[in-house]
Image (cartoon, rainbow, N blue to C red; front, side):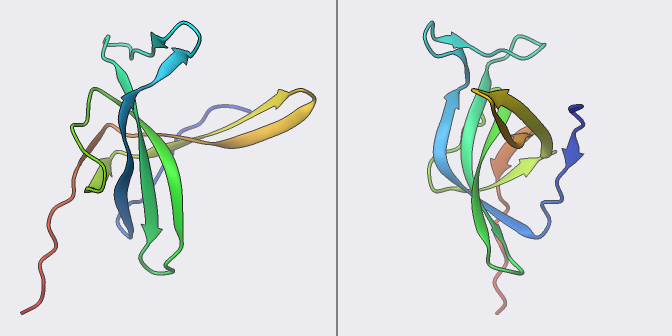
Length: 115
């Protein structure tokens, strides 16, 4: 399968940080940290994603270059979120999923309550 990035429309989604940013490891046994092409550390952040229209929620892991400086429980916005479908065969079984990457993850703008 080709690794074609798919842009994600985040306009109708709400995101909350449910797993604090941590460096992504290339190899868990050696502790080698993943770096991007510019030499920045790649962080992985767990986000809950809620579809405002349907109320459906999912948890996704998003990779981002550089420390996004967000904390657990904050409402955030992933900027430039894209998904990469993947598949692999391991132990004779086919596995598949979507890997997510964002250009950055920032605090969401506060919503304006109607008066």
